[in-house]
Image 1 (cartoon, rainbow, N blue to C red):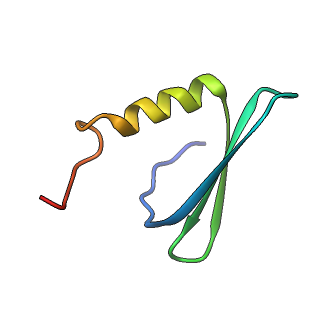
Image 2: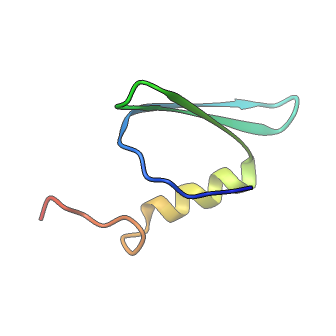
Amino acid sequence: MAWKRAIAVKDWSCAMSDEIGRVVLAINSTEGETTYVLMTTFQAAKMAQELRSPKTVPRYDM
């Protein structure tokens, strides 16, 4: 079951495996817990495109 939750991100790292063709995203939250996300390269590219879109990521520094 998938659910949505918002977390404050302290830092993140990403690695790709050529053997299995998957991308691993490790997200370190400010609460101290690490969340790992395993996705295909297509899903990672789609996520990167969505994060670059100003419609999906509001800017609060203005």
